[in-house]
Length: 395
Image 1 (cartoon, rainbow, N blue to C red):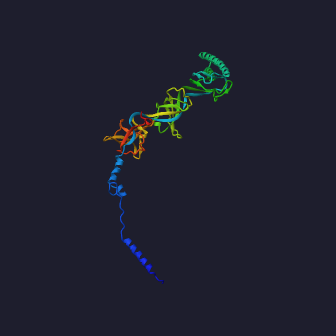
Image 2: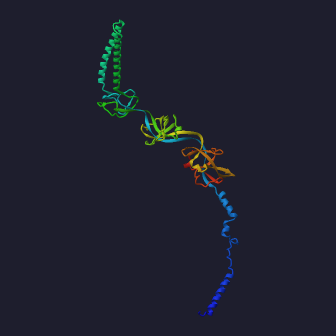
Image 3: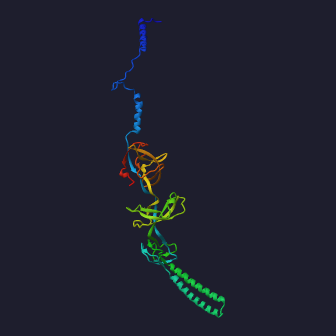
């Protein structure tokens, strides 16, 4: 073992003694800095806790500044439930003119676009052959008439048999029927207008051969227009004969709406579209509207008289149902009150409301805008302001 130095042993002993002294002597506590009042500052935890902090938080929730809101009064007005659909205009009556017999067209008696009256001659088919047959039948008819007269005279004197008399009478009746048949065929060679109207363009000319499938022209009765459209089955119970509607063209600039009335509702619903065909007449003349136009029809389904209405922006939808925020006077202050309501008809940005409990009047003020984004609760202070003019739908 190597020799240990005396200086090394003494240094180690002093280090152990110094360490023991440091452990035995306590360090001085950290002093807190004095506050402005001369006292000691409170610890951060103490500043955030305590009764004063609780009271201050309560004042922030209930006793803070009033919330500015835009309000309007409930009003009573007539609300109408309407339905918009698309449809087409059609003439009052329309007919495709076809001949009832075959032959050559001898002449055309109308101009394209001409207004005609019922019974006016439109076209004439060659009838020379039929007139010759009629002359032949007239001769047979005269002979049959004379034979019948002789048979009657002979029958009075018992100079002929009953069979001879019956044969003469039958030939007379047959000759008379032939004449009537030819007259009907001759009348069919005159193609006439079935009603008052305006003819469209003609597709044939004089000299063309026609049959019963040939189209000569189309005639339309434009004395009044009718509208044809489809109504979904959901709204059919509210559409019936006499239901009013308005028609507006989407292609004519500055076209005013024309009033109409339903006259037909189909009793069968189309399975493919789940809608039913409805027709109506226009009760007002509109020169800008023409048959065949694409139109927008607005049907009045229901009218509610004197209903309380609010703007749609005043409705607050929650899990418990729709609500509105009304302005209530409490100890001289304006505070918020949440009122559950039942919604009714909607029309042009307005909604009919009825209180679930209690009663609403036309003097009740409601928060009309921003109810979904404002932090409103029962008893919250309000600063009512008039609703801006651009949002005022009640007037």
